[in-house]
Amino acid sequence: MYDDMMKLKSEKSFTYVPDGSTLTEALKRTTHLAIGAHPDDIEIMAFHGIQQGLDHNSFTAVIAADGAGSPRAGKYQNITDDQMIATRQIEQKKAAALGKYNLLLMLAHTSKEIKNPKNSIIIEELAQIFMATNPDVVYLHNIADKHHTHVALALKCLVALRTLPKNKKPKKVLGCEVWRSLDWLSDKQKVVLPTSANEDLALQLCQAHDSQIAGGKKYDLGTLGRRHANATFFESTKTDKESSLCFAMDLTTLIHEKTLNPKKLIKKHLAILQKEVFENLVVPSMPKKKK
Ligand SMILES: [Zn+2]
Image 1: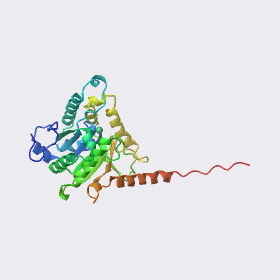
Image 2: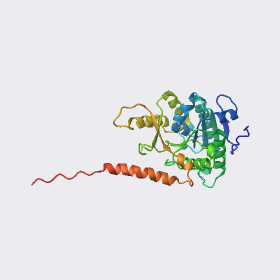
Image 3: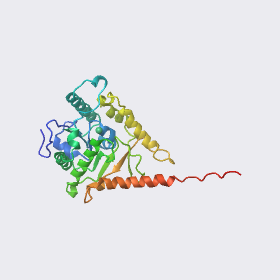
C-alpha cells in the first residue's frame, strides 16, 4: 500500500490523496504541512496553510491520533470508540476533499501513545514524513496549548525535525491556535497569518466534523469568531486590513538550537508580556483631602 518513501506504523493508519494521484507524487508536491493531534484540529489551526495549497495542490495534513476519546452527544451519544474512530475518519476525508488537500495521512495512534515521552516510534514516523514531504512551512500545535496531547505531539514533532539533515529542515515552523489563543504574545512576537479569503470554505471545513459539533461544542463558530476577534483587536489605532487572522508562535529556532529547550522560549514570551502589562500599571496618586 505504501511506497518505499514511507511506512506508517499503525495498522489502522491510512493515506488519502483526494485527486487520485499516487502517494509518491503527493508526498513530493507538499510545500505546506500541518500536523494536528485529532481530526478537526487542522481545520481549526492551519487554515492559512490550507489556503496556500488551494491553487497549487500542495497542502498536506497529518492527523496523529485516532480520535476515539472525543465527547459525544445527540445522535452520536451511544456509539462505540471504534464507531467514533470510523466516523471521524470519514469526516476528516470529507474536509480533505472540500479543502482540496494534496494529501491526508491518518497515523491512528492512541492519545496515550502520543503522550508517552518514551514512545520514540512516533518520532521516527514523523521524521520519515518530514523527509518524504520536505515542506517549506510546518504548522504544529503551539507549545503553550492547554491540551496535553497537543503539546506532547508538538514536542515529538520538534524532536523529529531536529533529527533532519540541515538541507531537509523546513524554513518555518509555526505553533498554532486551538486550545489557547495566542493573543497574549507580544505583537512583535506574533506570526500573523491572514485568513480573510475563502471564509465559506473555512466554515464548511469546521462543519465537516459534525460528530464534534453535535457533541455539544460550537467549534465552527468559535474558530471563525476567534479569527475575527484576532483581526478586530489586533491594532487599536488603525482600521482593519484583514477581517480574519490566525496568530502563531514561531518555533523555528527550536529545531536548530543545540539542545531542545521549549521552556526557555516560553519564558522569554512571558517576560515580554509581563513587562508590557507592568509598564501600563502606573497607579495614579490619591486626590488630596480638602481641609
Ligand atoms: Zn485536538
